[in-house]
Amino acid sequence: MTDVEVMTPREVPLGGPRAMRVRRTLPQRHRSLIGAWCFVDHYGPDDVDETGGMVLPAHPHTGLQTASWLFDGALEHRDSVGSLATVRPGELNLMTAGRGISHTEVSTPGTTTLHGAQLWIALPEDSRHVEPRFEHFAPRPVRGPGWEARVFIGSLLGASSPVVTHTPLLGVELMLATGKSLDVDVDETFEHGVLLDVGAVDVDGQDLRPSDLAYVPPGRGSLTVTAHEEARLLLLGGPPFGEAIVMWWNFIGRSHDEVAGYRREWQHQVTAGGEVVADGRQVAPGRFGTVDLDLQPIPAPPLPNVRLKERH
Image (tube, rainbow, N blue to C red):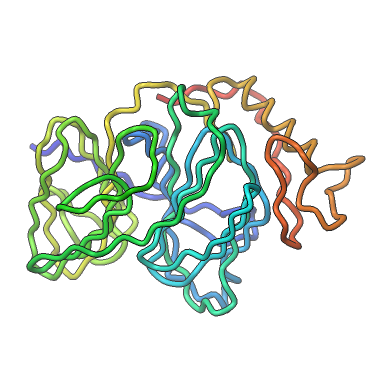
């Protein structure tokens, strides 16, 4: 009997009820993290002429890293530490929010189809207040009979990524030819997630459909992925996180009161006399900095009427 658990996605709006739709598999009610990976969104392929693409004005983050990975299209990233970068298919944008950052993500004018994954990584207690930073990395593909991989975080299949993480982590794009069965040697202290983008695969006998996320618990030294048709997937992993977090909207903290405090600080930055700041600045000075782009920042939604619960 397999111990692989298949989690199916739910569709949610990204950035508001009229925004593009994404398929979210993490967090779920019964599972919030795979290693330090705490958020998995899968989107597209979307016709930008129909959907309008991705237009995310300035919004804040704390206590996490964001990893942007594309299969098609391009996104322009700007942030409050002065970064300006375009991410394209096969490239990684990794933003460390630390104590606080704000950023924008907008699909480029030349993008006709948008297709990718947005991933978040929880920062551990001793790193969650680090200074914000940004990294861009384009991994070289490694290949074997019937497969190709791009290791964008961590190490696998003889390839390694130089980007900085604050817990041991793995992030890999893997492409398999029809009928290929690949045994992947993995760290047995890690738990793993397999997100299927396109095609049909099984992970140790459990079938996945596109946007499904398979959870594999620690204790295995290898995973077997079999492609029933040509497939592309993301393999994520890390040791169990071991800390409780409070995650709400774009913030990760350790208590309801801490997250509520982050919300108050962001609202103070984006409002002036009750109105959204609109004098050429994205936000006023403060914890989350400012981003130079002519888009109205996103105000935080109201907190729920109950105290935010810890996720484990």
